[in-house]
Every structure is written in structure tokens, then in C-alpha cells.
Length: 389
Image (cartoon, rainbow, N blue to C red; front, side, top):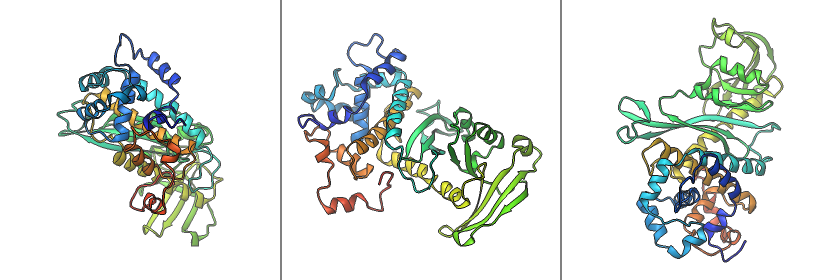
């Protein structure tokens, strides 16, 4: 890379800007815009995420302090908090959602063969949601409880590389299981979910799509055993059975046989029962696949700690979604950078280095190279949440 470029510019060079312009044209984002384009808005919001700016005033102060660098950052419009607030309020958030999907497609190819701890050739996804609490007076559209507001981020995470391939933002009162209706299931892929998504009518749709699911069974599950397979109890397995549902409604919702795997987790001292429609995987692999679901929990904790999605620059629904999707773009962009540079630095360390060097003129490769054994030790501290190690 050109050592004369500032770090922010080198990072933005990874963006397929021709695809971004297509997204802008799709939603008429720059219609009658003369000075502060959608690209200017995106670059300002990306800068805010990378440097963890606290407010619009903070963004304005930081960028205006470096007027000679704005052109080299790709920002052509004048920076003001009122202009950025208006852009977040009015410009369609779907521009940035669509662009995030393009970046996700790039990252998916880079992490195609990434190991996630389970011997599985097929693609595996973890599906879950996280709640972000909001003030109901400031965000009246984000209904959750009578005196509390919130939004939910429903996320389908590709376990190879921890790349979010689907994100849907709803108000807090929307039940998680309803979002299964929005997913397009890929034949042969595995979808791992907790028992909050145990809806047999929807699970049967996954089965009919020639895809597989792994979820937890509830204690009051009404079922009859048809067949039992032998298991090695020294591995933690307790049972591997073929069952049919016997409930009045569940037997109609899911008329096919299911596989029930019973497993004892010695680490947590818990007895877990899994349900799946796959009868070919080893029973221990089914248990390991569900254990890998915790990557989506780590993903939620990571983005809440290291990106700006718990406090928002605007109060409208459009502004909130715009900020969340630009945060996703930055997350995926840093993941792409890690693969492109083939660095062994963790995603956390890369983001921390970038946050204090945006205006530096240093090649990214040398900036992210390990300088000492102490840096390597700090980067792999067990106190930090690690997604890319």
C-alpha cells in the first residue's frame, strides 16, 4: 500500500465504492444533494465507529481539527453536526444495509474455509438476538414494555469467521421466533438455535427446505421413542434416539421423526437435550455444534463493547438503523482487512490500533505487525473477547 496515504484512506480503499454508488442510486440517496453526499455521510459514520466518537459534536470537532486531511479521507462535503444529523434522519438506511450485505459477501469468501472447532463440511449458522435498551421518551417508536424502550438485533451468524450474514432490527416487543419467517434457508446448511426458537411449524419449514436445524428441547416435550442408538458415555453422551412428537398440536406441526440427543456437560454440570432433523452426523458432533452457538453471544458482546451501538447519534428509527448498519460495515471491513493482510493480530487489537492512528501516514501492514512479544501477549489476554484468533 502507498505509505503516503493516511490509515483511514488505506482502510477505505478496501471498499468496493462502485457497489456503494449502486446502493445509493437504488434508493435515490443523493437526489438533489449538492454538498454532503451519502459517501460523505458513510465515511463520517465509519470514522465515528473506528474512533469511538461519543456524539455528533464529537465527530464534528475531531474532523474539523484536521481540515487538511479531509480531502485525503475522501470527504468532500462540509462537516457539521446539523448536516450529519439531518442525513442520518432522512437518508434511507437501506443504502447502508445493502452495502453491508456486499461486504458480507466479500468476507464470506475470505473465511470460507475457516475452522470453528467442529468437523463439518457444510455451512453452519447460529441464530439469536440481543436487546439494546433505549429511553422510551426519546425513542417512542421502540416499544418494549410500558415504561421501557428497546430495539432487538436479530442476527444470523456464519460460524466460519463469525460473519453476520443476516441482521434484522425490530422494536423490543417483537418475539424472536417470528423472525424465522424472514430467513431464506439454504439446502444442506445447519441452523443452530436456542429453545426460544422452538416452534415446530417453523422448524418443519426448515426441514422441507432440505436444511438442518439443531436446537434444545423443552422439559415438557411430549414425544415417543422409536429407536435408540448406542453411545459412548465417557464422552458426555447419554442417549441418541429417534422420536416422534405426540402432542396434539406438535404432532401436526411436525409429522416427521426427530432425533433427540442427550448430553451431560461436565463443565457447567448441566444435562442438555438437543433436537435435530439430521440423522447422519455423529451424536457428539451435534452437541459440539450447539456449543459453537455461543459464538453469536460473543459477537453480541464484542460489538457492544467495541463499536458504537449502545448509544445513538439520533433518535429516529432511520438514524438508529443507519448507525447500526454502518457499525456492521466497519466490523466486516476490519475482518476483511485481517484476511487481506494475513495478520495474526486479533480483531480487537486491530480495532484498537486503528482507533488511535486514523490520521497517521503509515502502511497498514507495518502498523499491524507484531512489534514485541509483550504486544502479542496483551493481544491474546483471556480478559478480552476473541472472535478472530
